[in-house]
Length: 64
Image (cartoon, rainbow, N blue to C red; front, side, top):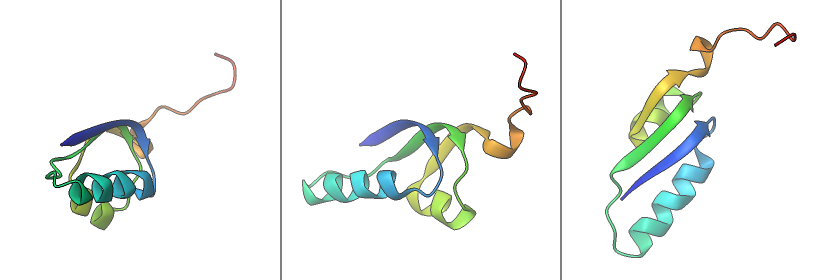
C-alpha cells in the first residue's frame, strides 16, 4: 500500500502509517511526497519518491 503526503521531514508519520499497514497484514509499497526533506537513510528505508527536495525549492523574497 502506498501513501501520498505533501511534505516529508523526519519520516515519523510515514513510519507510523507503515507500521499500521504491516500490522493489518498489508505490504508497504513506499511513500510519494511533493517535497522531500528526509535524511537519505530514512528516505531509503521508507521508499520515498518525491517531486522536489526542500533544497530545490526557490527562495521566497517575502513579496509574492
